[in-house]
Length: 452
Image (cartoon, rainbow, N blue to C red; front, side, top):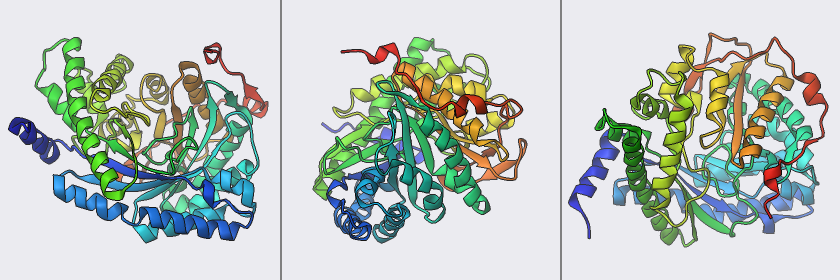
């Protein structure tokens, strides 16, 4: 039975508390598009994705009007392109240009999957694709890239880590006249999920069906407003409020995902119940932590508060849908979160504290702007540190750092839109990690990998 109070509450969440569906993402397998001729393969990719996704944006807009629920992004994720490059050979950038053409044809905001999975080593096509990433991101506007360099089962591929430090830096250099945006469209993962609907890390895993719809919800503002009604409650009450709120947010995601699945005639995959912030006032994960009692995000107690938030979001959301997946928890992208930006500007939030926080949140060091003269080996070392946290804790971690070419700490970089802006954070650039990274090889999988 429809409950009038619940309907009015949801309307208020949308109107006043920044509640939205952050993305509906159509995942599409390209395995049947492989061909020894790269031009034929690209044509197959274009034809298949355009055929399956031609109604994605119109259907998303129709659902928005029907239910009054904002859907901020309509996106596509595809099979890691390195798998196609292994068959076709040739310049992988041709695939990136094909994906860009697709995005313009069907009107999606982003298309992800210019990716490689090299957590245990390189197979055919992997090196070529990884080396092409900077050029691919520089010559496209809507294409996103990711590389999985480690997992709990495999350990960490330090040869790939060494490569990715150079790739991240080169991606920033090639787009320095556009606020180094190339690096902002590139994520380096440990334990990457195959059904993640969020960019820039989305790709369509080989264990997924031929085509499916995944939904990413949001709602930090809703959670904060709920906590404002309980200013003096203990932390058990705080956790209970967050769980109940996450349940309501996720139910909305389930509704949208089911509707999109039916209208598009493709299976419904998962709801990713992550709290994804934006630079808008009132839509910040950092402000939730401050509502719990912290004077500012980054002070002592921040990691504990984030752990409580992340756990409560998962517990509440998982009861609202039978198919929860992706990343699911709380994101802490610095440039995309108004509270994080303020804390970084005041220097209350440091790179060291952010690394500690990543041990208990959804992803990792996300949308962090670093000095433009940061060596590639230091970027690789940051990636290795974050991958180690993911590997040992059997969780997904990621690094998306943006070297601000020509800029130093104290200056800022402005992306606009959901990517926001932020201050350049200080690193230990006066101390080198180069010899450690140059060793290469693999960091072995931890004991907890042996679960059988």
